[in-house]
Image (tube, rainbow, N blue to C red):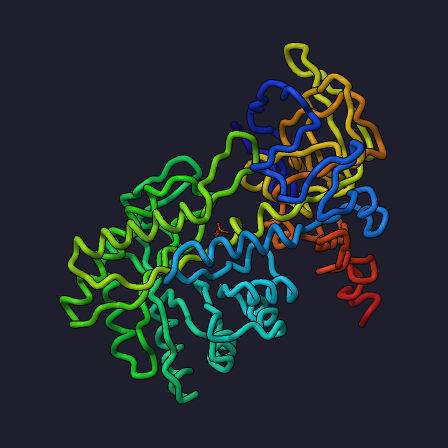
Length: 468
Ligand SMILES: *Cc1c(COP(=O)(O)O)cnc(C)c1O
């Protein structure tokens, strides 16, 4: 595939990846329960969420908009937390974060991962219990570390020798011992359906096991009076369905833990295996339940520790996508419908909606697959092969690459895209000066704005030509 022409934009894809359409589903109006939020249902043909018709939600909040099923999200958070006694669950705030969501996460008894000063600011504004906050990042600034120490966060996950020295000094000046986890690069790259145990560890995160950096980082932490080694951390990837990658990671982290015991005579208290637990985006995606996943990971750590003769440390996990992803949908209004004849004579229906890559970059960035449905009615029209695209000036501005929609889809229809809770609003941009959509919680027949829609005034507020 050639991508030599890149006039502008994050991925000006003049050459589109190969399409992989599956056959038309038996019923285009059906909602796959594995993909849609728990409360999603059709009533009189209209999609409902949290007991409210999507048509009413759009009448009240406009489109495009993200609607989040609060009960669904809380249930998933609770399922992870209660899956296994003695496992700490930190919600990865980068998937989506606002103060209300942070409060829900706190209510449900989870911890919170942040990886920038901005995410920390949201957590602190929400009065998130600071001892349950963990601070990540490969390049935390001095100001960010200072703020984390001042807030007395529970954990800092250290990622470089520079940072260990900086944090030691900041904690020492503050007169505290900061608990830290050492982030280890285990040489495992996990993907949805496979993992690669890489020979090299060529990435920016963590301390390499192979070249001895991880062991030296542990020694540096132990040598600093103001730092306390709480444990080891590994994060191997995202949208993972198979536990085999975690197995290799746990094995390698436990090997390091055994080496620490042999060298320093101490046993570590905690192993954090990171996030990356996968969710269903399209039919056939079949992730395990939170309970199954957590139990499997616990079993892996117990087995590895007992083989190494180590006391079993606390396990912690950091799911982001798996908590927030399935809970939200994005609803768009169709503006134009266009038939395009493909090589070979088949036709593809391009359905243009009022959002796009500015509210969901994942399709353009990762070639992600999504499921969508017509939301304001059901239809018995023959399904057509469709592509849902946005309104941006990019041919790569695709939301749902291949889908089947009723052949009578028309301007004014609403299209709902499932499983957009994670990494959509949090990665949203103002590309083409399109205001970012709101996030609205829905529960028991009522809706509450979590993040309001951006306005043109918001867009112009930073423009020093009008606001010097
Ligand atoms: C991104 C990230 C997570 C969350 O990943 P998900 O795929 O959303 O579960 C957890 N831990 C770390 C260190 C991360 O960078």
